[in-house]
Length: 356
Image (cartoon, rainbow, N blue to C red):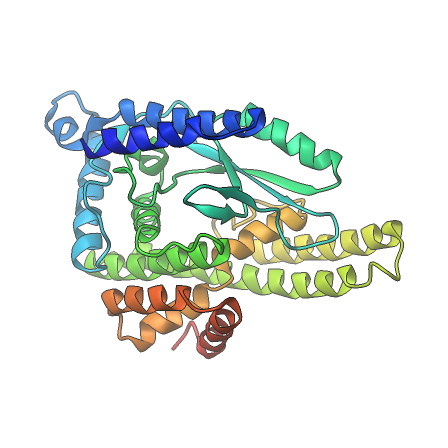
């Protein structure tokens, strides 16, 4: 009954949207999610069926254990999330489009009823994302389309488990579950970086505690190495974005051709530094395997997921890993004016040390 009521609310919302392109976007978004929901099979039933493949059965059992851990140790609102399973016909569930002006690091923001404004737009069909991307490229924007393994409906629906999760390694699947459940705890309608950094911090610290409980030393070492790579990549990205910000602030003194030349140089230096960094790691990093081609959109997306992660991890550390108290304080922080909120996050980030 809960889901039927929510579906009707979404359909009423869709009916009130004006404009052909806007109507088309909401239509594909709602239709895509409803299609996903209707294809779900109860995880409990699949576990009991004798013809369920052993590999899938193991993943379903792991997911149920992770749900219990999320609820009992991380104070996450697991509810009935991940209690149904969907077989996808593609490696991603949606693709996200990010569009950033050619000489800026501020992504375009799309605004939605209830959800507010976000720095990306999700599509269930790749061709629709590419059509929107082409429109931005014609206006000179840098763009990026990336496959998304999972997304959260912020508790509006009971999000399903699907093959986007189960195709991952065990530790990555568990971490992703923690990330998506964290979005139900705190969500700011106007600050994508706040939302994604918070969820990423819960994902990382939750995974660390999970692996400690599992006595999985090998996986824990790999998770630490992966986090070190992410941190080092973030340091490279922050240094490059600082250089680009200085460059873009000189638009009144440089021609577009000069701006493009300097921009290309900074991005190439970043790509080369990332390639050198990747030589020392066993897995592809956040930008994939080198060589990589980067633009403003790549950098904006990466920063959204990582910009404030050290701050939230530091806050959790100072609260002695009391996740419930973390959520209360982050909720209070989300209600602060932006300058005060950003100052607090910067203060926490400055105190964070990965090795303490």
